[in-house]
Amino acid sequence: MSPGLKRLLVDLRPAEVERIAAILADCPTIDLEAGVPYFRNSFPGEALLVVQDGFVVVRASAPGRSRTVITCEVGPGRLMVPPSPEEVLLGLGLSQVIVVTGDAFDRLLAVPGAARILLEQLAATLAQKQEALSNFAFTRHIDRVRRKLLQLAREYGHVASDGIHIDFPVSHTVLAEMIGSSRETVTRALDQLQHIGFVARRGHAYRLLVSPECVLGAASA
Image (cartoon, rainbow, N blue to C red; front, side, top):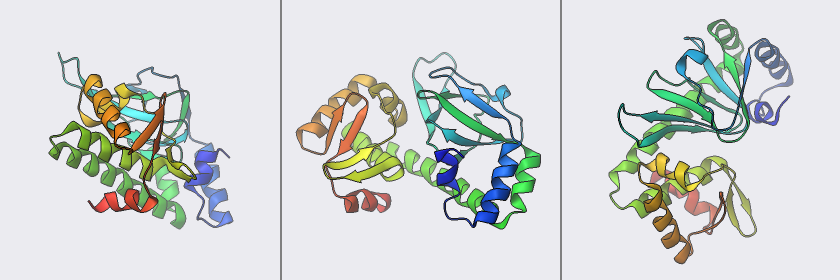
């Protein structure tokens, strides 16, 4: 079983884990090449997706516009819906998703632990989207970048002796698409946040120089 699935099923009884793993083993998997777009017709109409390995984003763009926006970001062990007709799904690096078809979904609902996980995961995805939308209320781009980094730290961070490391691979371009800004604007904001001691970065790796309480408190800010 992949680390992503272990993370998804960590709180369940062994018997339920075995039943769920057997159902998911019957589902098709798709290996996502880094940066290659996968469109809505790549997935069955009634499907849900489980990210088994890697990191996945959903990107949207308006016809005739060059700027794109990331509407969802998902790491291993998380559930998501397929892209809409106006969106594409991309892996940030090599990734793999399990395609949970309608029949498999019905079978999972018959397992109490799986039904609870499906509800919790869909609720978490909805909360993530609501938080991402609320970020657009902030007019200063430095505030948008700071809040997005806090969100990523809360979802995908781990605490170390030198700060909170964000495990999600975020380039300046990806971060700009997440907050609806240009890459250049995000670069300037990150420079400011480094100057005031909020974040340190090396390449696409970010480390927040704040307490875990600050990250958790940002959820209600």
